[in-house]
Image (cartoon, rainbow, N blue to C red; front, side, top):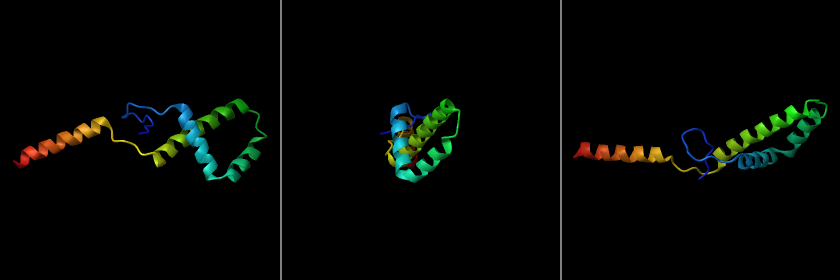
Length: 94
C-alpha cells in the first residue's frame, strides 16, 4: 500500500505524507522530549539551517514510521519472480 521509494518500488509516498507521519511519530514519542529540545534550540542563531534540519528529520521519521506501521504490498517484480520460480520447480518435478 504505502511505498517509501527505496528504489525497487515505482510508487513514492509524497513529502507531505512523510512529514505528517514523522510529526505524528514525534508526538507519540513524547512531548517532553520535544520541549527539552526546543529549550536547547532557543539560543541558536542559524534558524534557517535549523528549519531545514528539522524538516529533513521529520521526513526521515515519517519514512521510518510508515515502514514500521503501514502494511506494504509485495513488489510487482518480486511477485513475478516467485511465480516463475514456482512454475520452474513444478516442471522439474514432472
